[in-house]
Image (cartoon, rainbow, N blue to C red; front, side, top):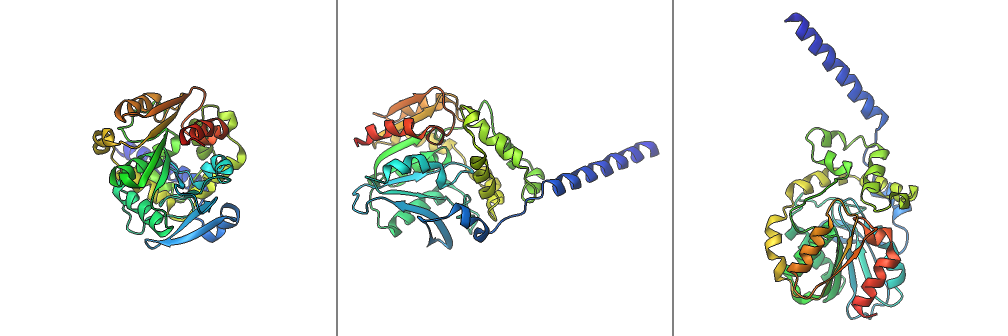
Length: 315
């Protein structure tokens, strides 16, 4: 018995040493907004006070646009994921994009409430503050799920809806980025708040691209550094625990606004069957599949995906 206890003590000691070494080697404490802003919030970025947060957003294009386009990013992304679309849209349309609470430079909700209704109120109140009554709403992944909730809550405010590899139904992934897996693991998710290997972020981003060779070092920098914004890692864990899709799935057929559904045929996080289900459930909607793209087709191939959106918007 003594030998067993001695062996257990040795194994435990080795484990502690390994863990300490891992944390020391991959030490990545939170970074302040001030540290990150120089690189990730140059003009036209601005910070708008709302709900006891400083919301990082970009509001570009003509102010007389009667139906601005509002863009919502997905989990662990940021407003920069829409750079490709915005570069073209802003010359003829007002384009509003923001870092959603819990992500990017906006950081966590002060009340730690990450329910869909909470996000829906946030989007609506931000539009109120910006003086936008009606708008086109587009969202990718979790941003698509928020877009669905806003549309269900306030259908009269939504002129058109664009879903890009949207969440909304119970997930049935064939592959989940490792960063998302770690965020769900007790103890491990606590360690990840102070230690984050850059290669894990790189592997996660490459996992959601149809062609991983399109992933650039600067893209990895963006995902990695904005994940380190103070509070974002704890917020991700809380959000993954709180968001449920079962109730929303039953309400999706209630959506009546004109809807375009874009999907990456190589999406393994939310596979194409979900896109086909949206097309069945939302009457009159249009589904466009991009066979070679992954979970973030707007980021991976902005010109091709935007061409479909422009046709839908009749621009």
